[in-house]
Image (cartoon, rainbow over all chains, first blue to last red; front, side, top):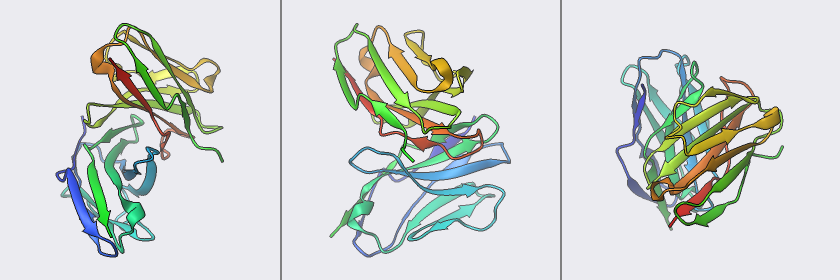
Length: 114
Length: 113
Protein backbone atom coordinates (compact mmCIF):
# COMPACT_ATOMS: atom_id res chain seq x y z
CA UNK A 1 0.00 0.00 0.00
CA UNK A 2 1.11 3.52 -0.70
CA UNK A 3 1.22 6.36 1.79
CA UNK A 4 1.59 10.07 1.17
CA UNK A 5 2.70 12.51 3.84
CA UNK A 6 2.37 16.27 3.81
CA UNK A 7 4.08 17.47 6.97
CA UNK A 8 2.93 21.09 6.77
CA UNK A 9 -0.77 21.47 7.66
CA UNK A 10 -0.64 25.25 7.14
CA UNK A 11 1.71 27.67 5.47
CA UNK A 12 1.68 31.33 4.56
CA UNK A 13 3.70 33.44 2.17
CA UNK A 14 3.84 37.09 1.19
CA UNK A 15 2.59 38.00 -2.23
CA UNK A 16 5.34 37.85 -4.89
CA UNK A 17 7.55 35.62 -2.75
CA UNK A 18 8.40 31.96 -3.22
CA UNK A 19 7.09 29.08 -1.12
CA UNK A 20 7.80 25.35 -1.12
CA UNK A 21 5.30 22.72 -0.02
CA UNK A 22 6.71 19.36 0.98
CA UNK A 23 5.46 15.89 0.18
CA UNK A 24 6.96 12.49 0.80
CA UNK A 25 5.57 9.12 -0.14
CA UNK A 26 6.23 5.46 0.36
CA UNK A 27 5.76 2.81 -2.27
CA UNK A 28 7.25 -0.38 -3.65
CA UNK A 29 6.00 0.44 -7.14
CA UNK A 30 8.43 1.56 -9.82
CA UNK A 31 6.00 3.07 -12.30
CA UNK A 32 3.72 5.76 -10.99
CA UNK A 33 2.72 9.36 -11.35
CA UNK A 34 2.72 12.12 -8.79
CA UNK A 35 0.37 15.06 -8.78
CA UNK A 36 -0.23 18.28 -6.99
CA UNK A 37 -3.85 19.41 -6.88
CA UNK A 38 -5.14 22.67 -5.54
CA UNK A 39 -8.55 23.26 -4.00
CA UNK A 40 -9.40 26.95 -3.59
CA UNK A 41 -12.26 28.07 -1.36
CA UNK A 42 -14.59 27.69 -4.36
CA UNK A 43 -14.10 23.92 -3.90
CA UNK A 44 -13.18 22.87 -7.46
CA UNK A 45 -10.15 20.59 -7.32
CA UNK A 46 -7.68 21.73 -9.97
CA UNK A 47 -4.67 19.86 -11.32
CA UNK A 48 -1.55 21.96 -10.75
CA UNK A 49 1.24 19.75 -12.00
CA UNK A 50 2.05 16.15 -12.88
CA UNK A 51 5.28 14.18 -12.74
CA UNK A 52 5.89 10.76 -14.26
CA UNK A 53 8.22 8.67 -12.09
CA UNK A 54 10.26 7.47 -15.08
CA UNK A 55 11.18 11.05 -16.02
CA UNK A 56 14.25 12.51 -14.37
CA UNK A 57 13.49 16.05 -15.40
CA UNK A 58 11.41 18.00 -12.92
CA UNK A 59 8.02 19.13 -14.22
CA UNK A 60 7.27 22.84 -14.50
CA UNK A 61 4.09 24.75 -15.26
CA UNK A 62 4.62 28.49 -15.38
CA UNK A 63 5.16 29.60 -11.76
CA UNK A 64 4.81 26.05 -10.43
CA UNK A 65 7.68 23.59 -10.38
CA UNK A 66 8.51 20.41 -8.54
CA UNK A 67 11.62 18.96 -6.99
CA UNK A 68 11.24 15.23 -7.58
CA UNK A 69 13.74 13.04 -5.74
CA UNK A 70 12.80 9.48 -6.61
CA UNK A 71 15.36 7.77 -4.40
CA UNK A 72 14.32 9.85 -1.42
CA UNK A 73 10.63 9.51 -2.36
CA UNK A 74 10.19 13.25 -2.13
CA UNK A 75 8.02 15.47 -4.32
CA UNK A 76 7.94 19.10 -3.24
CA UNK A 77 6.05 21.90 -4.98
CA UNK A 78 7.61 25.33 -5.45
CA UNK A 79 5.39 28.30 -6.18
CA UNK A 80 7.27 31.34 -7.44
CA UNK A 81 5.98 34.90 -7.46
CA UNK A 82 3.03 33.89 -5.26
CA UNK A 83 -0.30 35.49 -6.08
CA UNK A 84 -3.39 36.02 -3.95
CA UNK A 85 -5.23 33.53 -6.16
CA UNK A 86 -2.81 30.82 -5.07
CA UNK A 87 -4.52 30.75 -1.67
CA UNK A 88 -5.95 27.23 -1.44
CA UNK A 89 -5.51 23.80 0.04
CA UNK A 90 -2.86 21.84 -1.84
CA UNK A 91 -2.97 18.06 -2.05
CA UNK A 92 -0.10 15.83 -3.06
CA UNK A 93 -1.25 12.60 -4.70
CA UNK A 94 0.39 9.32 -5.70
CA UNK A 95 -1.16 7.60 -8.69
CA UNK A 96 -0.69 3.86 -9.03
CA UNK A 97 -0.68 3.25 -12.77
CA UNK A 98 -1.34 -0.46 -12.31
CA UNK A 99 -4.29 -0.06 -10.00
CA UNK A 100 -5.52 3.20 -11.47
CA UNK A 101 -6.27 4.91 -8.18
CA UNK A 102 -4.78 7.81 -6.28
CA UNK A 103 -3.59 8.09 -2.70
CA UNK A 104 -3.65 11.57 -1.21
CA UNK A 105 -1.85 13.38 1.55
CA UNK A 106 -3.74 15.29 4.23
CA UNK A 107 -3.28 18.59 2.41
CA UNK A 108 -1.49 21.86 3.13
CA UNK A 109 -3.50 25.04 3.52
CA UNK A 110 -1.57 27.86 1.86
CA UNK A 111 -2.43 31.49 2.50
CA UNK A 112 -0.91 34.20 0.33
CA UNK A 113 -0.83 37.50 2.18
CA UNK A 114 -0.97 40.88 0.46
CA UNK B 1 -14.74 20.70 -23.02
CA UNK B 2 -16.98 20.58 -19.96
CA UNK B 3 -15.40 19.33 -16.78
CA UNK B 4 -16.60 16.77 -14.27
CA UNK B 5 -19.83 17.89 -12.67
CA UNK B 6 -21.44 16.76 -9.43
CA UNK B 7 -24.88 17.22 -8.01
CA UNK B 8 -25.92 18.38 -5.50
CA UNK B 9 -23.18 20.72 -4.32
CA UNK B 10 -24.45 20.43 -0.74
CA UNK B 11 -26.78 18.02 1.03
CA UNK B 12 -27.97 18.11 4.62
CA UNK B 13 -29.91 15.07 5.81
CA UNK B 14 -30.83 13.41 9.06
CA UNK B 15 -29.33 10.19 10.28
CA UNK B 16 -31.20 7.25 8.83
CA UNK B 17 -32.26 9.01 5.65
CA UNK B 18 -31.11 8.20 2.14
CA UNK B 19 -29.04 10.42 -0.11
CA UNK B 20 -28.03 9.95 -3.73
CA UNK B 21 -25.08 11.78 -5.20
CA UNK B 22 -24.58 12.13 -8.92
CA UNK B 23 -21.45 12.51 -11.01
CA UNK B 24 -21.23 13.33 -14.70
CA UNK B 25 -17.74 12.61 -16.02
CA UNK B 26 -16.04 14.36 -18.89
CA UNK B 27 -17.52 13.10 -22.15
CA UNK B 28 -15.58 10.13 -23.52
CA UNK B 29 -13.94 9.26 -20.21
CA UNK B 30 -14.42 5.56 -19.58
CA UNK B 31 -12.86 5.66 -16.12
CA UNK B 32 -14.85 7.12 -13.26
CA UNK B 33 -13.74 7.27 -9.65
CA UNK B 34 -15.36 8.15 -6.35
CA UNK B 35 -13.32 9.53 -3.44
CA UNK B 36 -14.31 11.10 -0.15
CA UNK B 37 -12.78 13.33 2.47
CA UNK B 38 -14.21 12.76 5.92
CA UNK B 39 -13.73 14.98 8.98
CA UNK B 40 -10.95 16.98 7.37
CA UNK B 41 -8.81 13.90 6.91
CA UNK B 42 -7.11 12.77 3.73
CA UNK B 43 -9.02 12.09 0.55
CA UNK B 44 -9.67 8.37 0.30
CA UNK B 45 -10.49 6.21 -2.68
CA UNK B 46 -13.91 4.56 -2.72
CA UNK B 47 -14.27 2.83 -6.08
CA UNK B 48 -13.43 2.81 -9.76
CA UNK B 49 -15.66 2.14 -12.76
CA UNK B 50 -14.49 1.27 -16.23
CA UNK B 51 -17.49 2.08 -18.36
CA UNK B 52 -20.38 0.42 -16.48
CA UNK B 53 -18.27 -2.19 -14.69
CA UNK B 54 -16.89 -1.88 -11.17
CA UNK B 55 -13.16 -2.35 -11.56
CA UNK B 56 -12.22 -1.83 -7.93
CA UNK B 57 -14.55 -1.20 -5.01
CA UNK B 58 -12.04 -1.94 -2.28
CA UNK B 59 -12.51 1.47 -0.70
CA UNK B 60 -16.26 1.24 -0.14
CA UNK B 61 -16.68 1.46 3.64
CA UNK B 62 -19.69 -0.83 4.06
CA UNK B 63 -22.86 -2.09 2.43
CA UNK B 64 -24.73 1.13 3.15
CA UNK B 65 -22.96 2.55 0.11
CA UNK B 66 -24.10 1.59 -3.38
CA UNK B 67 -22.56 2.95 -6.57
CA UNK B 68 -23.93 2.48 -10.04
CA UNK B 69 -23.00 3.55 -13.52
CA UNK B 70 -25.71 2.28 -15.77
CA UNK B 71 -24.88 2.75 -19.43
CA UNK B 72 -21.36 3.78 -18.64
CA UNK B 73 -22.10 7.50 -18.54
CA UNK B 74 -23.02 9.23 -15.30
CA UNK B 75 -22.69 7.54 -11.93
CA UNK B 76 -24.68 7.66 -8.72
CA UNK B 77 -23.55 6.97 -5.19
CA UNK B 78 -26.33 6.15 -2.76
CA UNK B 79 -25.94 6.13 0.99
CA UNK B 80 -28.73 4.25 2.77
CA UNK B 81 -29.22 4.67 5.68
CA UNK B 82 -26.88 7.59 6.28
CA UNK B 83 -24.87 7.73 9.51
CA UNK B 84 -23.18 10.67 11.22
CA UNK B 85 -19.72 9.45 10.20
CA UNK B 86 -20.68 9.66 6.54
CA UNK B 87 -20.44 13.45 6.67
CA UNK B 88 -17.72 14.81 4.43
CA UNK B 89 -16.97 15.83 0.88
CA UNK B 90 -17.51 13.29 -1.87
CA UNK B 91 -15.42 13.79 -4.98
CA UNK B 92 -15.82 12.24 -8.38
CA UNK B 93 -13.03 12.06 -10.95
CA UNK B 94 -12.73 10.76 -14.48
CA UNK B 95 -10.03 9.87 -16.96
CA UNK B 96 -10.03 8.77 -20.57
CA UNK B 97 -7.67 5.89 -20.06
CA UNK B 98 -6.45 4.14 -16.92
CA UNK B 99 -3.01 5.69 -16.97
CA UNK B 100 -4.10 9.21 -17.72
CA UNK B 101 -4.65 12.12 -15.38
CA UNK B 102 -7.80 12.05 -13.29
CA UNK B 103 -9.84 15.24 -13.44
CA UNK B 104 -11.89 16.02 -10.39
CA UNK B 105 -15.32 17.49 -9.94
CA UNK B 106 -16.14 20.16 -7.36
CA UNK B 107 -17.39 17.64 -4.83
CA UNK B 108 -20.63 17.21 -2.91
CA UNK B 109 -20.54 18.34 0.69
CA UNK B 110 -22.68 15.94 2.74
CA UNK B 111 -23.73 16.70 6.29
CA UNK B 112 -25.58 14.06 8.28
CA UNK B 113 -27.27 15.37 11.41
